[in-house]
Length: 204
Length: 206
Image (tube, rainbow over all chains, first blue to last red; front, top):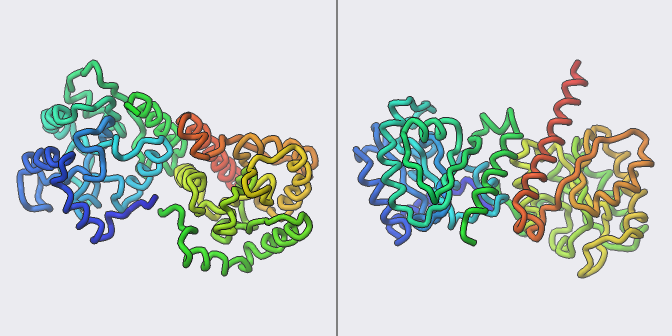
């Protein structure tokens, strides 16, 4: 296992060449629809889904908060992003036995707010994002579990009045940011137990 | 972070070239003497670890036959066990320089055998005690796997000072894959070990 690989321009180029692969193309089209500008540094730019994930066949949707600063460089929401949150996420997925082919990473507020510095989204932001998240769910027919990663994601889910989908389990886990895991490493144990639970709802 | 790096020849050569660095040299000499005395292959301590300055000893069961590929007991070995253990250490917040890896039975048991018997553990106990005497900063021992726990029962009564121990399920894929809760228990044990090292550090600071 190697983390942070999307920091390498060659890896990023190879990944970008795959955004129209069959399992990811409908999600790429979805991102193109929700992007309201072509300028990666203007508001309402959103990154792509990771072609190295489960794509439309994902059984576990991990909903984080909003794209972090590194996403502006890599253009993907990915466990391979060159930051500590993604690295921790890679370790958690590995130990939980959740292969990337079952998982899709996304953010409850999908647009980039934090290109220059980390910005916490407001309730208004979360309400704005809710219809987009609901649309995403219609693109994921194999979905078994949604994991809300971090308190902002949990709050967003509540504020947004998401539909209760009877056959989809909704779980919550601590955010794997170093700001959470370093002062409270027991949060990592809790996150791992939630991912282990998520795995049990998947088809093997 | 990158796991399995000791599978890369240049990384392995660089690591082996560091066996005489001050933080591991006495441990290197200890492993070489042990190999001579026991008459079995004994892999080396990892110069990429805390060595003599380790605050946490991760005591596994016995070397895997694949240990001869790298020759070092390390989180960076090209095995899934080492990869899982790397992820656990990373998430627990323990730093590489806080940790030392070793085995309750430090020699290679055989080409296929990996499960130490009671006799193996009994023979190894004095060597574990000798190792502990080299580690003045040690705050906790994590017993990784049931055989390591059994071995410790033979060591604990002979310790000059009591050492906190934590039990940790073995991170082999055979153990982790069917039971995700084993990984959670393992991580909780390492988190607790980290807490003990920080607690004692702040005690010393007062």
